[in-house]
Amino acid sequence: MGHDIVIVGGGVVGEALAGAFERASVEVVYLDTDSRAVDRAAESGVDAQLVETSEATALDHVSAEDVDIAIVASSEDSRNLLVAQLLQVRRARRVVALVNDPNNVDLFVDAGVEPVCATSALVSALDDRRRTTRDDAPQRTRVAGEVDRSDDASDSGVDA
Image (cartoon, rainbow, N blue to C red; front, side):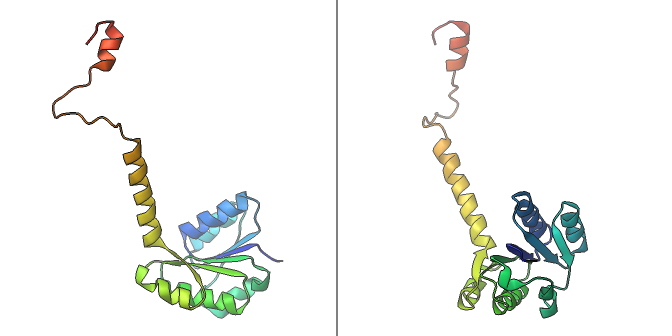
């Protein structure tokens, strides 16, 4: 049976990704060494399998050439790179891997693996949030100690 997406590793993150794809009616298989994450994913209806993800035989459970996207998401960059390369050898169409250390991004790119850098993604999300918060802030700057009484005046019917 072919799968649209294979998620390898990631613990709770991999489990959450698999669950989200499953809810979106995407054919997904989740492979991990974390038995609790595998159990939770299986309970939510995901095809989840407990395997040693860094062993080439772990990928025997899926037909990688039928996979549209392979996502490798452990907390170890070396493991992610190894598994990503194994998936490439097995002809997965697109391989995306979590990169935990930004200094390793070039290694993944050089290997032909699409990197998603956790640090860069977090910095970008926080920067977007900061900009949105700043853009949504009131334009009027108050002098220290000044109190805005506009609401009080309008409620009481008295001009301020």
